[in-house]
Length: 305
Image (cartoon, rainbow, N blue to C red; front, side, top):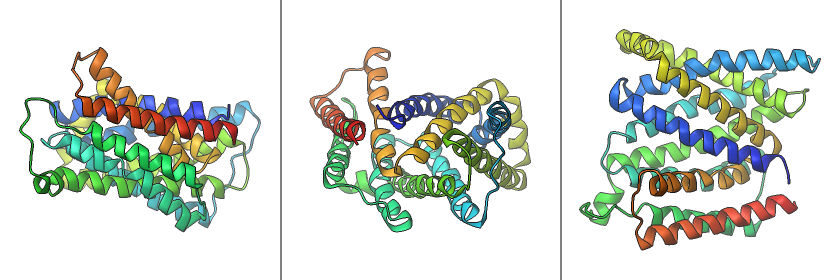
């Protein structure tokens, strides 16, 4: 089995944990920007230490990033900041499931951006699997029983939909930017290039977003620092998940990685059923089946490639 497959599954699992922790911060302590900054602030030093220790342990010199590296990395890093803020903002809105569904357009958009920016085309079977997975995600967004069904215009044209679609675009740009940056490094093995790219990205994100928060609401800086117990866990899960994503992006096209990464929704579904004891509708079960079928095609094509 190619390494990018288990690495992607691990990254998706850690992302599920991180979103859960960030939601807790958003609804209990911090603003949207603060909950987003906590992720980058607490993960940046951890990643920097890992890069230094790994380079020393493997006797590798750190590759020197060039102009192409920064041309891909900086837009990718800033797009991820904005995309994460969109997702955190969704946590306070009623139409959360609709927004999350539209966020998953990132898989389709990642394939498009990868073709435009990196010239990485995908095969028709993979494209079909991505479309099948998106249909499954739409079915999984069926409103829970007891909720008032909204007219289709209200379901599509609301703040949650805007945040969800914007995050899909931004995360698609981010994924392709990170793959381009990692591939632009002139030397180093897969993990060194992936971790160095991650270290540079989180450093840019922590500094830029930190300066913006300090300018807009200095008190929020103190709240982020005082919430270190939960924020530290956000940083840890973010670091582990991001190391997985960046390594996978270095090994495989961003579109395939993102498509397999939809297994995150399967993890979320299983948690809701077996831990929260929530009952699922027939539409949700059908959506899960389509999503699993899509992931199965991606897994099989990736395993035999």
